[in-house]
Image 1: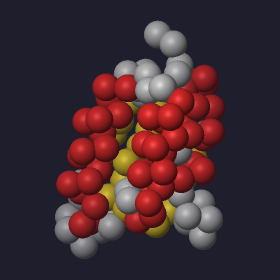
Image 2: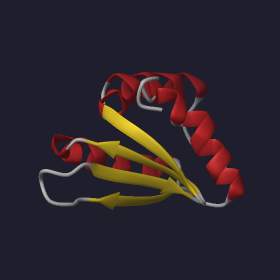
Image 3: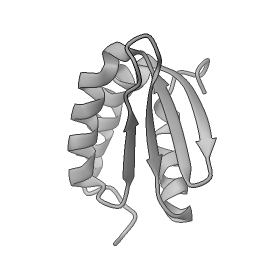
Image 4: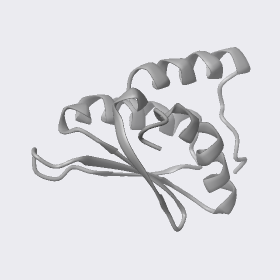
Length: 103
């Protein structure tokens, strides 16, 4: 399976701008994992994260998503992972969307 976004360049740019302004603007912290990255969010981000996972599975079928939904007073964690090539893709695509003070 190719490690590339299924969107056209203009669609991809618009999608990344949207994600930067919405979901990833609410990212509290990022942690590198062995095969990807874990992004922390407040509990109220759950609906947006579920929508994000549903749509990204369509255009990036090579990504593995793991959404941790602990009790309401704890941070949510979205882990994006895959092989070494996928980890590079995650870093180059999604880390740039996280506010600098969270990265």
